[in-house]
Image 1 (spheres, rainbow, N blue to C red):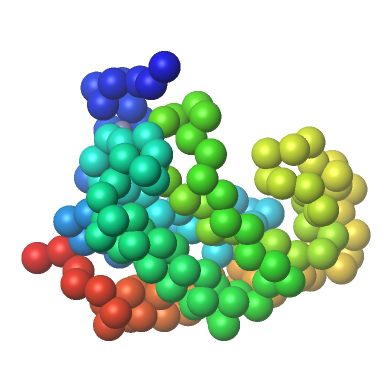
Image 2: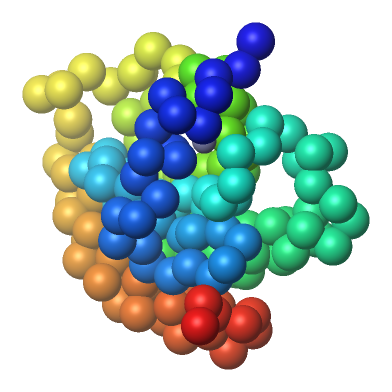
Length: 156
Ligand SMILES: [Zn+2]
């Protein structure tokens, strides 16, 4: 079962500010204090699965996702990047690109699992790492926009 575009929150948010967009997809910053630099890449039309896209569109989606990953690795310097396309709640194709650090809130589980570190129970190392990562976000966003505009055609 899939929701209709009329009731889809991602369709409804299509005009909201994006880090970068073109006619096919949008790249948005996810505001999550535990995961500074977290980005979503959202296909603009209401399709559920990668296999709903034709070959050229699939390739474009993955090229953008991987370019986000590359800039994230360079600049956010996470221990690992998690790529996820779930869409169980919102069946509108989108990829999560999530910077992960050893000992982060959900380590070593997926972000959708129960947290391993309760709010208020963070170590000094945890807080310092999160603070340092958060400071790198504006520059990460700047570099990401620059790289995507250099590699792909932006919206007219
Ligand atoms: Zn939608």
